[in-house]
Image (cartoon, rainbow, N blue to C red; front, side, top):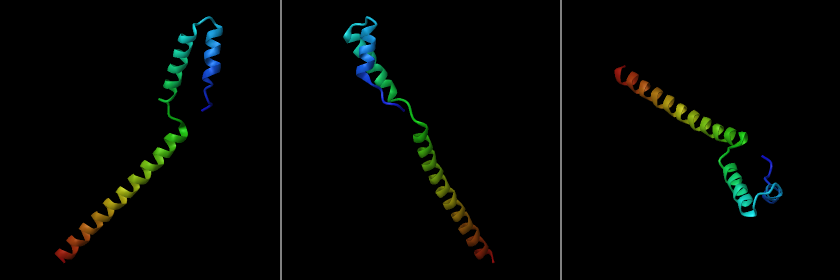
Length: 77
């Protein structure tokens, strides 16, 4: 995401006739709203972490299941 130039934005708003205080408030609101967005790269990184955790849990579950089946077979044999 490109950097947001707050000074240029405020000066542009002031050039259209907005008072300095109002222009600064609008720029602050825009800047705060930008923090609520997530980049595609961040989403992909988090998805990769979740996939790794899920893979580990699935492998552990399969391992436990195989162990239980092996114990049952051994007990009944």
